[in-house]
Length: 486
Image 1 (cartoon, rainbow, N blue to C red):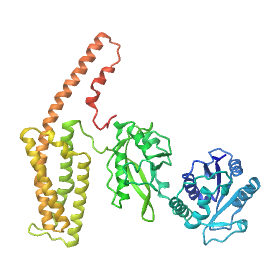
Image 2: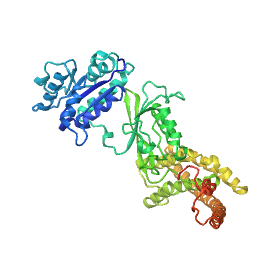
Image 3: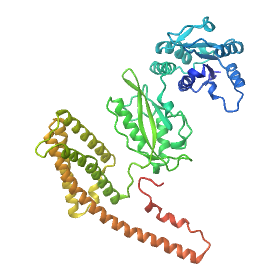
Image 4: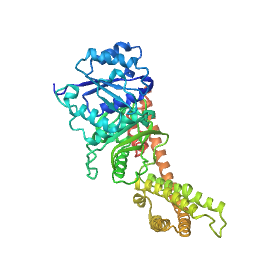
């Protein structure tokens, strides 16, 4: 049959190659759905492990032997080789060894593959996937696999055999691997056909047990419950685009609510862990998902949410950047002169600029400045618009001073920013207080309506359940627009 499966048993010493065997299994199976790689670590508790191993070896077309550097005791490996040759006389014996290791007598009559990237690619991986005779099947396992992919996998297998362990094996949680080899990421739909692998599944974060799917399928799965947050997918796309353009990857801030039965309500944030390159081209993006205690930003609907967000951003600028900056200067320098070395000045300017950029990114992420105009009335609206224009001028002056390494101008710009921040905070806080009082009045009216409805129902039917469909009338009022409590 053209779609015949291939089975490989990995013969190895658990003491030296346990982790390498598990990594090689993952790598080999990732390129085709028709390959089953068996390692003895898969035996379930209570299973008859000798019988399990004998059955898997007898069913295999290939025996992949991982020779240890110390070949003084190969008793068990020799036994498994003998069992394979007896049960599968037409099977293929593939032996991997370190280039510097001695060749033991038990495999001296076989062509051995040195565990180097070039050897692994040309003499093992390429024949395995492309040449059906290698495994004795009618059709190739994967004739479309690219040379760049084979070289990447060969390097990963070489690292595993050398004891360079993939850091993901130490990660507790879930992660996604996005493969973009051969895709045009400049195209708006270029990422849609990227292959996404989830070695542990997506049960905790998306209540989804799929281990391999396309990027468009991941986006569709996330969109099924928009109330739990979907921006994280877009932000991952932006980060991939940043790296593809050889730019620094932006800071990821988005969070979302998990859907798993055991993790419902928990909050996760994706982060780019690392990127694999072939030459200068990024080909694989590794994302990890960390649980966080607080969502990115919780706010109310419409005006009260917009004003709260502006107040939050102003508070961050003041107490996270401006205040620490001037406190540091006041403690270390007299008012008449900034007694800092040129290197200290550069470092201080760089840290302040970086912090301001991060906060600016969050403001852009939530489109705060675009929405805030409608949240103010009358003179306050004119005043906030004037302050926003001043903010832009001050921001440009600070950036110019930083680029020109003009420390005096940089400090002057931050001084004007501090004065502006105080004025904005007062104005926004007063508006938030006004909106909070209006919200309190609406909330009291809503609660009184609920209590009246409950009293009428209890009078008509004392045995009625205290919570019924009437609650749905008010649930939209209680639920934040970002779906935090959904």
